[in-house]
Amino acid sequence: MSDTNDFATSLMDDMDPGLLDLIKNQINSFIKWDLVRFFHDNPHTTDTADSIARYTGRDVRTIEPELLQLARDGILQMEDLAGMRVFTLTGDEPTRALIQDFIAACDDRQFRVKAIYHVIRGLR
Amino acid sequence: MPSDTRESEKRQRDKLQRDASRVPTGIAELDRMLHGGLLPGTANLVEGAPGTGKSTLGMQFIQHGITVCNEPGLILTFEEFPQQYYQDAANFGWDFHAHEANDKLRVIMTSPEVTRADLRQINGRLESQVHELGARRALVDSLSHFEYLAEDPVELRQIIYEFINGLKRLGLTTVLTRENAALLGETPDSEEDLAFVMDSYVMLRYVEIQSAVHKALLVLKLRGSNHEKDIRQFAITKHGIEVRARFEGTQGIMSGSPVMTHAEAFAAAFLKG
Image (cartoon, rainbow over all chains, first blue to last red; front, top):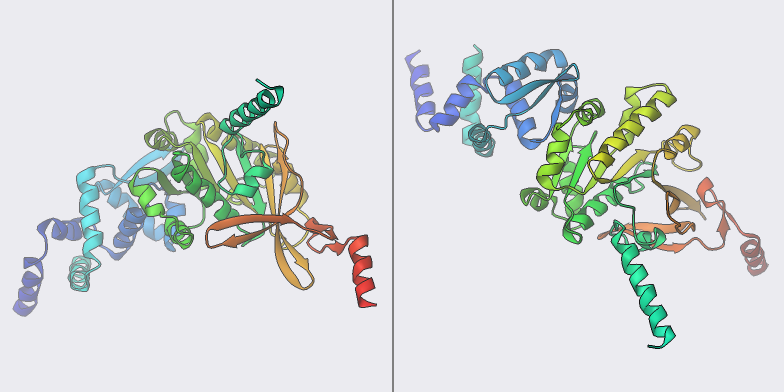
């Protein structure tokens, strides 16, 4: 047990605190990770959960709760458009910059391994 | 001043005036067929089978606007991911990433239902993007996805009419692509219906001539202006679309399977004999 904690501590030690907080509290599932990457790649997209499910190749029943949580956590904006609930990437610049840092950091395999560890740990 | 010179100057002035009131596509020979280009603030349909070059034509229109005319552009995509456009554009040497970074272009992936609802709003997202960017041109790729919004052709036509009027209200000159399921041959009636609400209609077709597939381009309609009516060959080169000479010695090109004209058939038979 203590070995596991030591390992976790060592993983946290060399991770940017802002990114660690983002992974632990906002991007704390693999579906959210996919969704954040999708909105990072498509920052001008505003669409319904149905369409986003189609774009990301997932079931709408799976992604809708995750979209709602991302909206609640300030990663996405949610609004009503003619009776449709639509989602778009937040316009908040610091949050966008943090997401940009996260996506850029994901290019590094070591970072990805650590991030995956934290997401799995959070899912338990 | 000799009258010939005056006449020549007048012609030059008229030409400049005409050109100024046009939106060139950047495809030189197509612009000549259109007598200078598309008309500003209009909706222009480019229809053709998969792979004929509809999106390429649209991207070239956007690229030309940004780099030559200083007219920023929007791409509304209902199918392809923006990454696909960046990649396809790069194959022609067009740097869409740089255009986006320089606030000259936005590639927006969305759905027809959301775009339609957004356009109906006052100060909707699309309107804000147009104002922020100073966009003058748009590519809608593709209009075929609107078919999911209504099964009834009359209702669909009304939806599309409303949509293109929304784009016009924003002052955009828009190229809208539409897929034709038939690889060769005539356009289904429903597609011709749609052409009525468009300001111009360019058809791209595959044509089989002597066991080889060629590509044909025809400007079927340009509302409010004359245009060339000949059927031209075209190719997708490493620089984009290049419209070439008209088809010679064949007739029935748009059927997809043309036949030789009487004169050509006679000459061929004569040479064989």
